[in-house]
Image 1 (cartoon, protein in one colour):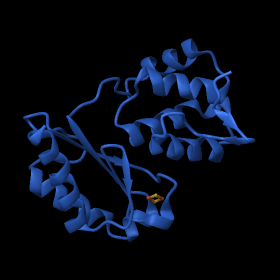
Image 2 (tube, rainbow, N blue to C red; image 1 turned 90 degrees about the vertical axis):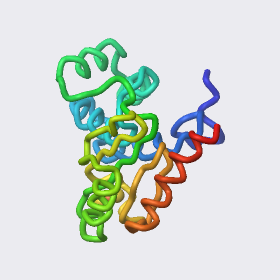
Image 3 (cartoon, rainbow, N blue to C red; image 1 turned 120 degrees about the vertical axis):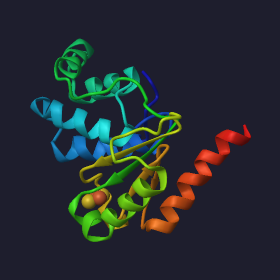
Image 4 (cartoon, helix red, strand yellow; image 1 turned 60 degrees about the vertical axis):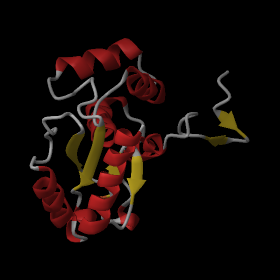
Length: 173
Ligand code: FES
C-alpha cells in the first residue's frame, strides 16, 4: 500500500510533480489502453524531455504492464531519450490551441535568443528546447513546460523572462 490513494481520489504522483498530472491526461484520453503505450511514452517524453526509470515505472503501473515490457518497448524504438539533455528544459506545446494562440512566435523568440532550434541543446548544456503535441491544458494556451513547471498563457516576453530566470538561478547557486 503506497498511500497514493486518499479518500477515493487518486493523486497522480506522490511527488506532487505536476508533470504527472499532464501525463495522467494522456492516460485518460487513451483510456489506459495497453496498446496506447507508445503514444503514452511519446507524451511522457514531450512532458519530461526524457524518460527516467521513475516515469517508466509510473507508466507500467498505470497501464498494468510489467515494467520490463515498458522498458523493452521504450528501448526498442530509437525515438526515446533516457537522459536529460540540458541542465534546464523548455518545451513549447505546438498543439492546435497553442499554435493558434501564438506558440510559433514564442518558439521563434526562444530559438533566436539562444541560437538553437527546437529539439536542440545549447553548447554549454544549459538549456534544451523541445516541442510537444497537445499537453492537455488547452484552456491555458499557449502552454510551455519550463523545468517541469507548467506555464500557461505565455507570450514571447514572459517565456524569455521565465527561461532566463531559471538559467540565472543555477548560476547563483
Ligand atoms: S494544444 Fe497546447 S495544451 Fe492543448
